[in-house]
Image 1: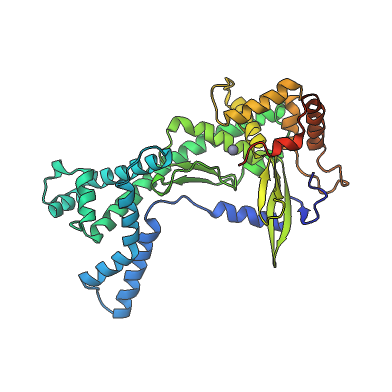
Image 2 (image 1 turned 90 degrees about the horizontal axis):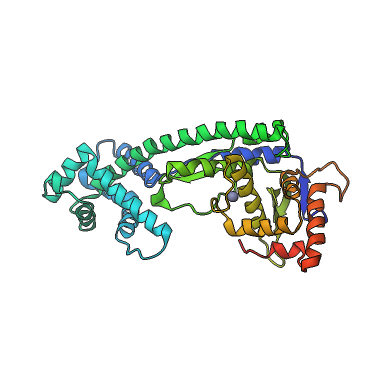
Length: 377
Ligand SMILES: [Zn+2]
C-alpha cells in the first residue's frame, strides 16, 4: 500500500525520533479560559513595578490589566451575548459563559464587590446585570480579573474531579484489556499494551474556550469539563483503544526539516494527497468504526443503538455481513509495521484484509480503495 512510497522512511518504534515525539505529546496540558492572560497581566505588572522601583498607581495598574485582559473580556461578552439558534458547540460555550457569571456571583468576596459596584443587593445579582456592568464598565477590568481568578480556581477544582474519574477508568481498562489479550480477542501482547498505555496524556478543556468535538491527533484523552460523568468511561475506553492500536512510524522530509509521524495508526493510513503538500488520513472512517466496536465490546455494550460513529459502523457491519471475518479487521488494526521484514511482508494482516475485501467486494463491485474516499474526514 505505502511500502512503495519512497518519500517516507520507516523507523522502529523505539527510535529516538519517536521517543521524542511521544515526550512532546505528553507535555500538553489542560487549559482554561483566561489563565495565561492572568499570568501575563501579573508578569507585566511586576516588570513595570520593578522598572519604576515602586508601587504602581491605580491608573497604571488598570492600563496593564486593560492591555492584558481587555481582549479576553470582549470575547467573553460576545459569547455571553451571542444569539444562539442552532450550533451545539456555541450553545455549550454560551452555557459555560453563564456558568462563569454564576461562579462569580456565588463567590463570597466577589459578590460583595459586584453588589456595591452595581448598586444592587447581593440577592438581586443576576448574570444579566453582571454582563451589563462589564459592558458599560461599571465593573472595571480589575473586577473582571477577579472573576477570571475565581473561574480558573473553579475550573481546576472541577478538572481534578474529572481527572480522578479518568484515572479510575484507565485502571479498569487495563484489567479488561489484559484479559482480552489473554483470551485472544485483542491480537496484541501484554507488553505492548502496557508500554502504549503508559504516557497517554489526559486533558480537560474549558468549554468556554471551545467545545471539543474532534478527537485529538495525538491520541490523548481529551474531555471538556462539562462532560456528564457517566459519559467519561466510554470516551476513555475509545481513546485507549486508539492508544493500543498497531502502528508504523515514519520520518519524512519537509523542506529542510525531518518530521516524524505515525504513518499507520490502527487502520488509518497517512498519505500525501495527490498534487498537494498535505498529509491526509485514509481509512479514517474504518479506523473509527473498528475503534468504537472494540471499545463497545470491552465496555460490554453491544447493542447497535449505543455508541458513536454509527454510520461508519453500519458500513463495517455490511462488510462483515458480506463475508469479511471480523477478526481480519482487528488483526490489521493491531498490526505493527515490521521494519525488519522484506518489502511486501511488512504488514501481512493488512494485506490479508485488503485481499479478502477485494475478493468479497468483487461480487458487489466494491474495491477496498473505494472505501478510502467514501467518507471525507
Ligand atoms: Zn476515535
